Amino acid sequence: MRIYVYCKAMWRAALLGMIALGACKHSATSVPACDEHLAHRRACADQLGGELGSELAREADRLEALWTSPATQQAKNWKDKYGKKWCTAATAEARTAFPECRW
Image 1 (tube, rainbow, N blue to C red):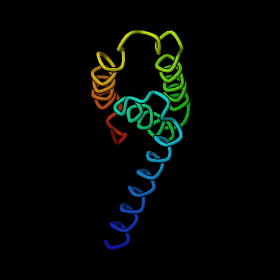
Image 2: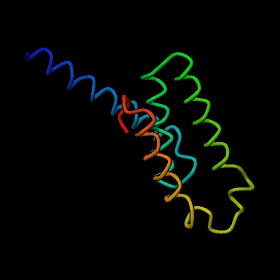
Image 3: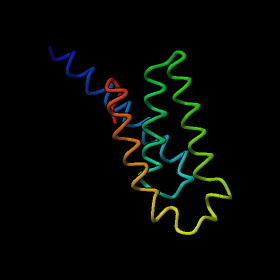
């Protein structure tokens, strides 16, 4: 029983470390909710692996490119008006779609 609890705690610590590393590495949006969503999406992709994981990783890259594109950056107050709301909703939707991942 002790080994199981220890392994579970180590797995959680490793996963949180990966999320934190992903958040530091990919913090280009400057909207904390969006940066967090991207980090969680990439961590979920790594956890799932295979074709589904690859698709999630590609989607994270596409979303990051969209949110950091010059056109989006020039849109007046897009981050203040829509950033947090959209990314929070995207995370809630992902929780439902991928319950096996930690969101």
